[in-house]
Amino acid sequence: MSFAGHIYDMIRRDKENRELRQNLRERLKADHNSPIGKYQDCYKDITPEKLDRIANELKNKSRQDEYRMKKDIILLLLLLGGGIIVIMSIYLILN
Image 1 (cartoon, rainbow, N blue to C red):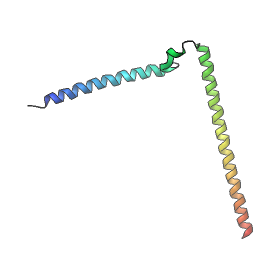
Image 2 (cartoon, one colour; image 1 turned 60 degrees about the horizontal axis):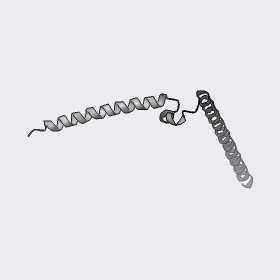
Image 3 (cartoon, rainbow, N blue to C red; image 1 turned 90 degrees about the horizontal axis):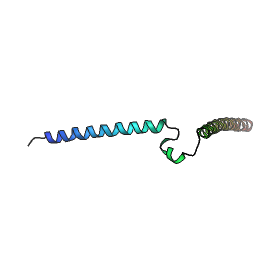
């Protein structure tokens, strides 16, 4: 017996998997391009204007969070720097 049947089976499975991957890719692109993805049917009562307003609110909140995080990091660095200066001053005074 030859092993050609196994090779044909492997080629067939590879072809099926390729088609499945292509279908998945197309479905993901469709979900990615839609305003609310795969949950579009759940939100039919939301108007496009409301969606735009929600998107703008989310962008603004993201910007605010980013600004707050940067501010906190700067404050933390200033406090650490001040602490290091105080510790070094005490060390120099005691020596």
